[in-house]
Length: 552
View (cartoon, rainbow, N blue to C red):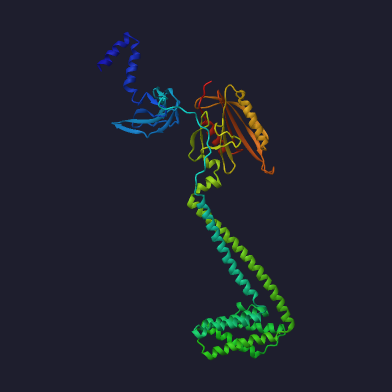
């Protein structure tokens, strides 16, 4: 209070003291929010980590947002650590750490970092860190030239396991096919075994007697089979739905049909057969138990009925019957073959479905997607990307999957490394592709006169050779976002056809070329037109380009 009174007394005589009063009041009340910056080391070796620490002192009610960059200046963020919180009365101290590194020697500035406090940017202090080379004693450790690509024998994989698995599934499928074929073959042979209904009825009757059902107490089963034999005979020889009719319905239909076809069958024969049907119904539904003599009598009546009915049929009816039997036999054979084909096809489909599901569960759905089904651009955007360096001079780039090196089949000199390196990543679905090419050149060579425009021109000519039509191109300058290296970019569209020159597909492409002192570096990207996800994916790839600068 004394100090304030002294200041107030001086305000009248010294107008400039108003500034000091404002400054002191700002120090007393305005700095409730502060941001401190520190690093744990000002010098590191190449590839080592330096920790940048930001401390924000705020109130409990303040909203603080720390950034999550991939790069801070020219330093790569290896890890962004979780925020530590220290509470002091009604204030908080928030501590945020970033692990940084760099793989080139030099002095690197760590710029001011904006931290949002209550939606307002508060900046940290800038600082710098020196990245030192790793000293190598060339007297104790001699230096060697970089060796070229050496062809090696491919390591043994588990291909034989997959082969055995496929062979086992094929064997199971073959067994299933042979089993079905055997069942239907026996059915067809059984259908073709009998040339007439009477022959079939006699054969079934003999087989029934061999079973000795009623002798072993199975009277119900015996009467069921006995009446079925005669019903089948009537159905096949008289075209009466005997198997679906009740006993009385069958007798009524039989009497009517014999009159229509002029078959002379006595009423006594029909009545005796009717009595057998009624006895069978009593055995099956009323649990009647006939004695041996009754069973023998019923069996004799059925046999006599079948023979009498067969003899009573006129010759023209027998001829018609034979023709119907032959047509029916042919239809049955065709029907059996169709059923066999249908069931075999169904089993094969189920077999491959089960095999595919088994394959998916054992090796994983991701394996199938990666190697057979493929990812769409939308799916690939949501996966974890990788950042790698390719070629010489090195190109650092972020891609959905590591790029695959394409070996030049025309390069035969194993003692020297190929100055051209090509890498690619292609979609299994043929929706997009990424190609990267680096060419190391001698500055004194005539090839050193190649300029980016010529590289783009040659690439478009190659596209035309590969069948691209209606190529539209736009050229513009390009600059990397990481280290501001300038290049040339061409983008446009073209129409792609299949091998037969049909099914046109509209595609887009982007070409980015860099010309450095001893290298030419090219990016070639292709994707489907009107595919916004693919466009976003390619933008992400291009924005991640970081080149190692060579000396002119």
